[in-house]
Amino acid sequence: MSPQKQERLFSKPYAKTLFSIADGDYRTAIVLAGASNYRIENAFYHAQQAIEKALKSVLIHREIPVPLVHDLAALLAKLPPDCQSPYGYELNELSEYATVRRYEEGNWQPTATELNEILTKTAQMLAWAKVELAK
Image 1: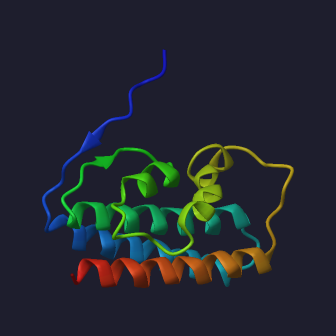
Image 2: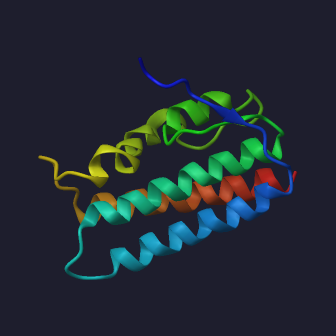
């Protein structure tokens, strides 16, 4: 039996706090990207976390119950039609960095170029969320 996906309604002011934490995860990913001798998946993990928290902050701001999951697709599905994020479901591939890729080495080794692309998309997701939080 699989556990049910739970949701939680957070207080609206928490949206800005969570966005700040998302920004910190993004900054951590950038620091890792500039480091040497590290596991590149860790930078992808922090990028995923930044996007996840940015999405959750927008849901909180909109007073929508937040699924307590790391699945970006589940979070994107909760966004109302007038609040669609850049890249949409394209970023869901990052969800695995918050789950299985944290604990195992995969056959696919991401490249620095792929990381830079994800960091650019993460920055754009944060910019989108910041605009949404200002509404």
